[in-house]
Amino acid sequence: MQVRVGTVGGRMFVAAALAAVLAGCAGSADDDGKKSADVSASAKDTTADGAAAKGTAAARGGTIGPAGSACELPVRFDIARHWKAKSIDAGKELSESSKGEDGDLSGALAEALLRQGPVTTACEVDAKPAGNIGFLRVWTGKPGDADAGSVLRGFVAAEDNVSKPRYRSFKTGGGLAAVEVEYLYTSKILEETKKESAFAVSTPDGPVVLHLGGMDTEEHEEMRPAYDLAKQTLALS
Image (cartoon, rainbow, N blue to C red; front, side, top):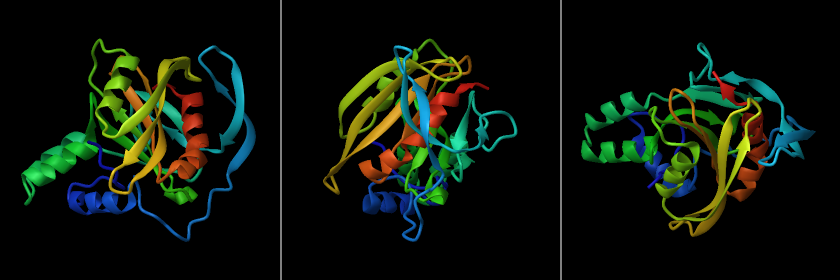
């Protein structure tokens, strides 16, 4: 089961889980936040058959992945302007939570937050400073023989209440073979269904999954340009 919360912190798991129940998505709301105006028209997204489809482009706000960046990853890609990246040390968080006062409860919450199928959280890029409620999260796995498609299917299978997954293959702007999925996630608590997207690539250092959620489908669609920017610029670090 995946629990959706804001920034991961070893001492905040219980509060984060409560926030997930109330909000039903990653992130906390900022009611006074304005929707980002930093969106321009007419970008190109490389599709599976190599054709270019017109869409909207997010203004670039920096690059993460390389050594010295906010998140050091096996891949590098551009993030949208005003989005804020933070590295997550999943191993450290899991270790600290297992030693906390709540013991097994903290450990179980940490597992739900930090692990999904074959990958663990490595970085989260917060859309809240840009006026949206949601995250672009980066998950990484151990090196091995698993291909990107298998990893992505394992990632989706580990999430409860998923329906209508649609997979496709494409190449990132940096030339990496990738597999993408779009699916619906239903919150049984809120009785609401929303769209989510993710894609995976294989690297010599292990698989990488990028996932875009959001409070609801409307938020998801408003954040899509940032997700598409990552696809268009993603390459090996």
